Image 1 (tube, rainbow, N blue to C red):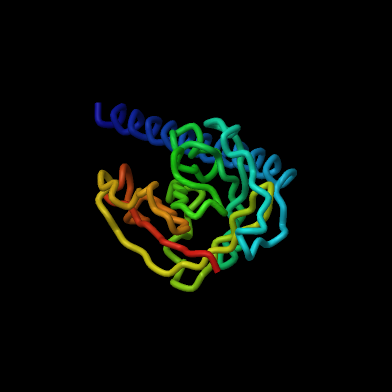
Image 2 (image 1 turned 45 degrees about the horizontal axis):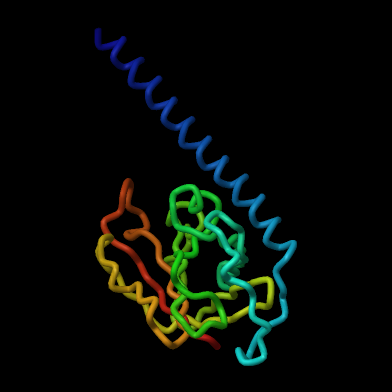
Length: 192
């Protein structure tokens, strides 16, 4: 009886590991496809003065669209930005929270991603590090100035009514937590 139970647990463990591996591989393939798509239309021209930006038609953006690339120089990591923060979008890249601003609009821009996929090394970022948001009409550079940790259900960090440009980037916390993490790690970056 104990031998059969041991074998059943080993099989269950192998199946769970296989499923997890498949999910990670599938997410990696989807992210790579979205990154290739984004890199085909984003501009590397750095935008330093918002007044000179040719405005992009953000009204045409639909949930699930690839809208840009988030480049994190410290991690040398490029991540596709997908409109929306549902699970489907977050398995393919970093999600742009619908209803928040876009670069150059002088509003809050909110990006979210999973700590165990796109933001695996997020804990290595420090104040002064940069985020480069590459869009079709140019690249916008933001410098990290502050961070906070809030409970998962705390939505006070979302403020679409802001009239100053801030890039807010969030992920689950603690980084090494197994399962649904109880908190969110939030970084605030401002135009450089």
